Image 1 (spheres, protein in one colour):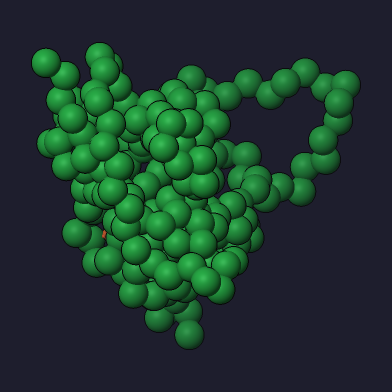
Image 2: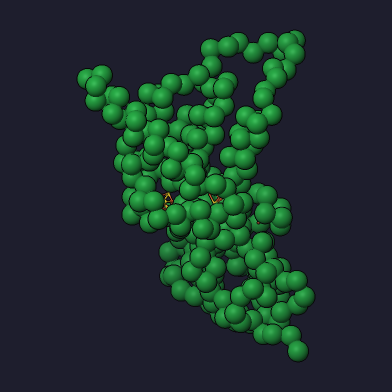
Length: 245
Ligand code: SF4
Ligand code: SF4
Ligand code: FES
């Protein structure tokens, strides 16, 4: 006998002055291997075509389907209904601007984050398209790749107490991004350059270290290790700065 799933879904359209935040209830019959992606599409196709939510890849790659699932940020396409109780509450990710219902604008937040962290390779070397590709040590390439696996879903930001209290806090995703450039030998920024970006309350010293970010990251990025690494590095840089003054 298939289970009947009761969904309580947040509804609000900030573009519509008549709209007020509330939840709507939908009941869906569970099918084999059902994910929240499948359930939400069934609701939209069969019960309410106005329901807003985001998806692109359905495979945990694009990062578009982040939402708060029974109180915990996660990817809807990676969440099987069989892992949840029959009552499921879906809310949009906090911190990001609400587009409508479960859809949020993560793009604007991430663009600002990339600007703040100067998220590109800083080098004076001029690119020559007729040169052979430069070799990179395998271990270094793997370390960079490991940190580059972030899909920008925003779940770690939504789970972060500091990011929810302060909109200038960069969040674990930005700090992970900085750690990625620090291990990249092509980026010629000095420790002092990095300190200017993250050696403050908006960066690593604003982090409370409770690690909700690592708990919810669907790609299992080693955020705890990176936050510890940056805290040590930037702590040493702070002491060096004291002696420079
Ligand atoms: S460990 Fe730091 S970045 Fe992660 S959730 Fe806590 S405050 Fe946010
Ligand atoms: S670090 Fe993890 S949780 Fe945060 S945006 Fe990247 S993939 Fe999502
Ligand atoms: S739809 Fe792309 S990560 Fe879920």
